[in-house]
Image (cartoon, rainbow, N blue to C red; front, side):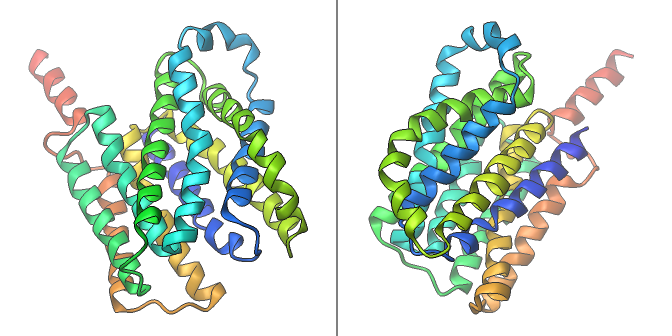
Length: 295
């Protein structure tokens, strides 16, 4: 089940990696793209979640649901604004690269395997940024990227916390993202007309809302129910690598030698985290060792 969860998270990262290329196909602003994509995707998740039979369990954790929902509402506005101000590469690097570290702090999960994997992944994403020639970036853009990384880690933690309390993954994701979508409605009302009027705006909005946001987060929730939050978020470091490859293949951008080294390091991160061999210090290894001692 853990391997399936990892595969679901990796497929999610591939879908998320297409968002930058898709968003580049329209001239609409970052707030419009972020609000419509995450807002509509979140409301759709709530619509198919089947939350009603589990409402008592959700009411028992109102703080977790509320914190997760606020993080869902803030994340797309911060993430797309970060890319707009600091550039796609730097915005993605700061947002996605900071999230695994924050998630590990929230979970208090620091293992040898995670440490090596996260180090390879964050370094690889940083080299991807350098390979794009984007080593700078505005201070506001970088700060917004850090805010995006924080909210990404927090809403993932919130959903996983609900799941650990017996709430099914689809219900947990539907509650957190549905309420987050409701909070984004005012932003959508203000910004959606500009997105819909922009060239290819409706097609971009439909793709982002239905595929990477709705479908991607359903997969991510299924994976979160089977993989620790810190590991799942570290696995999504594949997203910048996919985004960089699509930028080269579709948009025609150039990726330098450092960028290709970064792709290789991200691949190494995924190998470390998904390898079936237990590492010293991992929780699974400790539990197996304790069971053998008791026997």
